[in-house]
Image (cartoon, rainbow, N blue to C red):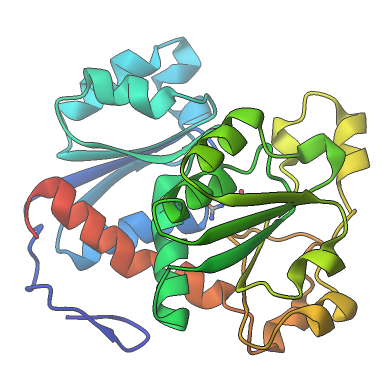
Length: 284
Ligand code: NCD
């Protein structure tokens, strides 16, 4: 089966025929929900979806997440959940008799994004070992950052450099977990100094919706961006990733740079999510 952009897979035709995936999203999404749905359709399965679950599901009537999941488990063979509370996917998995995929739990984690991020790095670079990753942006609320650094920490020779505004520095428990896994960590404010030997520049937007104090958000936003000076300091071998959506931190002028890998990264969500759904459903 031809998946996307010349990516061939060894997937048999329609392995998920007759299976149903439910996407329940309490937070906005373009890439994650649509790529999960496209992946399921490409596997031959069907999709039921509530894209604005906070307003359009019985959550608006006061139904608990647990009850919603109990009910949807009776309709679908796999549930993909995005929710604003950290730990919500784990709660859903406790009550669901079918597999639950975490598509983002508030400021917690976004593990399927980490899989496609790592896949992009591996395809461009040939491997994930001995990697220097510079995380530029929101390392406090950026769940894609949390999941990617924990995934990379499973490979030998990792160096992680965090460059964030003081309002969005990586949480202490994350740094502890990374140190314990043997990752060499640097926290800097000067991005020029950080990127000269980077393999990956992983850029994120400051997560406005997670800030309880708008003043703190305003102080944190607009502080960093990928400009011509930064691009000049970044090695030729490096790649620029961004989970998207982007704001001012990643100007469109960067798109023409051969190191810009973020559209390829978004596309690779399809084969990754096909593989994941196939495994979750036991059909691949
Ligand atoms: C990210 C998310 O939702 O955490 N987007 C995505 O899934 N590709 C990043 C973000 O919203 O900034």
